[in-house]
Image (cartoon, rainbow over all chains, first blue to last red):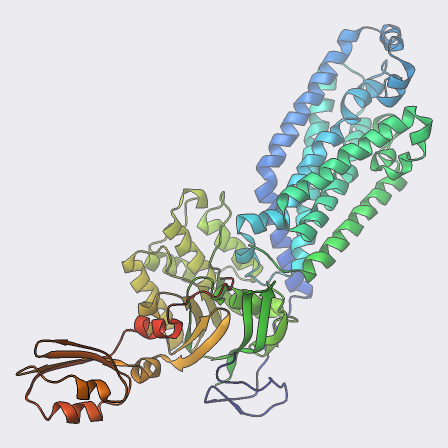
Length: 301
Length: 302
């Protein structure tokens, strides 16, 4: 039903009547958020989001760092290399292959099996929770209408949250690296700083990969539970595919479909920059899809 | 004047019965426009569609001449918005939030925000999780107004505010109008709408029922009339007059509502000895209720 019918607005129209009042050609006031304005809002959003994440990031960094430090501290108690290797020979071969137990006699091999092959399973949840919160969480909490009441493009909300999560993740892995290397120095374990740095930096793309997936789910489904559950299931499923693929001929062909296949073992072999960039590009694809999905849907509160 | 807000057959449906349908509306620059309707009538859906949060199912809308589907960011740069249902980041203080919003808008001056906080007695130094609903509402109002936008869109702005703060808020709305800025606010508090609004639009079950100047709406509506004579009179001739409804007699007193000009009633009453006459305009609330006729909610989303 219409009351006080209005003619279709015309950009070139002269005065016309609306609800008995004379109106004049409409003025437009383009305040573009391109260029400096766009980078300003993006920068402000990233800083704001990092601030909101900093407490969680600190907790994750300290907890994972302490765990890694504890593992480093136990390394000297296992005695010499031969003893350790003999101990590992007691495990079935398949299990040694699946869980990287082949080279436990070196600090790098020991930390790879005890910390860095498992760390993505935990740390990815920081990225998943943070990115699920960005859209679906904000919709459920009711904060998104106030935030988007500002001149903030939707795409910036998506990209800005991923950038903020990426920065927070860098902080976490830096903390893990410092705890790990610092403890190695204290207990006289031969673990070079560069090796430690490569190991923790290699955590970054795989964790962000699951953050990007959570962001995509958050943009698609506007339910935080789904945006956490789907990447969580994918995380464990792809981990299992990679682990089982190492010992099962039937599953070996599936390993390339798992992101863990490209994670490798940076603490032993250094960072595979091709895989590093490839995983990061797939994350970028998730973000692009999230931007497209979020840009086309209603915002729910 | 030109239109600050204009809609053409704006429609937003969620399935079969909820949403808004074919809303044609024009809010002109510099006016205070009240958007009235009960919960679920479609007020919030209209507002969220104007801000680009919801994609229209049909029709179009413009804010300051800009298409809401294409220029949402530019529109929001010129609008201060208070959502109907909202939350603010629990761990942040009002001051931190306002600084963040100021940065998003390319400014740093919080002078007016502090003035508003003082007038509304808002505490900007405490985290949101420690604030009552009313105090959060005050922060919500300040974040909508502190950057002096040309258009304020406020969804149920006085919810949770105590009467003194409501009074101060209405004073601020009057000042906004005096500055030539536009206010569009939804409410079901008819007394406040009647006080500050130039025009009102009434929405019911997702449809815009009427748009009127507030005064005209009240003036054109019925009147409560009470006639007291020196002795009981026959009510039948009064009941037969055009526009007379709800006639009641109580001794020498006749009470009725009059939906026509009073001329015929006055002439008929003058045939008797009239010792008392009360002629009252209804509140906007009563006018509002006449539009609803007891079937308020058509199932529209709020």
